Image 1: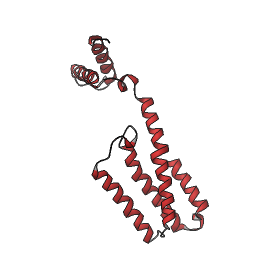
Image 2: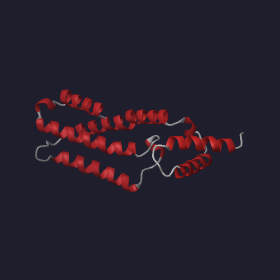
Image 3: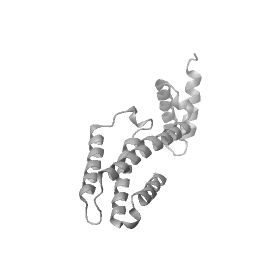
Amino acid sequence: MVAEALLALWFGWSRFGLGSDESGLYTFSFLTLLYFAALSIVSARERRWFWMTMPSKLVVAAVVAETLIGTSLMFVGLPGLAPVPWWEALAIFGYAAVSCLVVNEVVKVVLINWRRPAGIAGMPATLRMQIATRAYELYEHHGYSDGHADQDWLQAEREIRKKAPTK
């Protein structure tokens, strides 16, 4: 997000003339951070694609309220923050939406799928639950000591898979 925000700043500096307008630069920066923060909440709440599950009504209300209030304040202007035209706010929002909900979303899903062990991702839920239960039993057996989680999981998986019928 930092690189994308800096790219937005460069674009605003060169296309919107923010280099000579200090309060306009502050407003542009505020809206950029506001939209990136709001849209990151939508993306970060889900490990898969953000549209796979609907956010709660409270999350939707909070994100929409935050965005609308922040944007409306920038239309009237505040001390130190110049009002912006609607098309500039729309351009910033569109850029943030594409950055967060397309570019960052693809990177997020690819990295999560790359780092998730294939055996766990494709494992049936009942088998995963049996392994988790056995791994916790091993954790209890080791006296709740830290540092054995990976070994406990692997041992539990070997034991359960040995017992499980093969298809």
